[in-house]
Image (cartoon, rainbow, N blue to C red; front, top):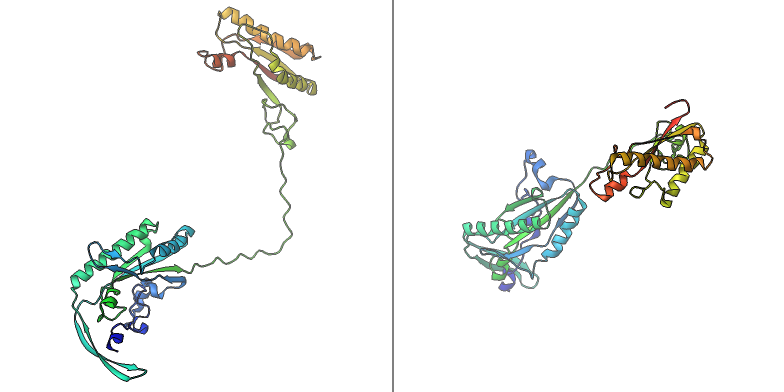
Length: 353
């Protein structure tokens, strides 16, 4: 029966709360220290994970058979990813560090009182402290590697001050080399719901629409249905538009690819008879300056004639040419030159420019 007594676990009442940072079941904590002690906090949840047993050495070796560390890290990661407040304590323990000779009287169901002589062997206190610190440091680093913030981790080495198992049996003694990890999730004050007095529902905000997309809402738009691409004033009325008529080099013939743009211009001129326009032709720098001046005017006139053929009054149209003198892009490449071969239409009210 003596072998039975050698493997007994110390009574849990002796170690109540020993894994709470700053708490020792054998003494009271001064009131001044309670605010800095995890044991006295208010928590939504406290999770005490299974003991992580280790074999002393340099480095220490964790016992995979008794420590399911992966599940612990998975649990902790849930709090990390949820971005809720938490604190983790990492408390290291070792076997006792001095020899103790004592006898314990124990009650047996079958044999009454038994006397058991318990002989605890010697352990070096400095070595115990060293292996305890190494075990704590390794677990702390693994927590950090699992995305736990370092300032959320509290560590403490208690050496052999709180053995969980009696020291008389070799197997039991080895289990006192352990690290205890505890997660504290404090209670978070929930905001007091704001009491809103019952009132009539507010009217839905009026949606301001801009049907023609010119940047002026319909309520203020004095020229609705302005075609896309027209520069407008604060009243939504056009100031000018650039028609990207891709004239071939040295040509004043309007290509069919520009028909849609010109049709929009025609519709606008019919819908808004108070407008008159000035057509300005432009060229690239291919050819002489004088020939480009003449070509730009012919391009403007080509568009003027097309509008007049569509019953737009000639007195509402004027034409001029700028030649190669007002490029909008570089003439050093074909893409830039194509942009410069263009016509611009400036729009004015009949009352003046």
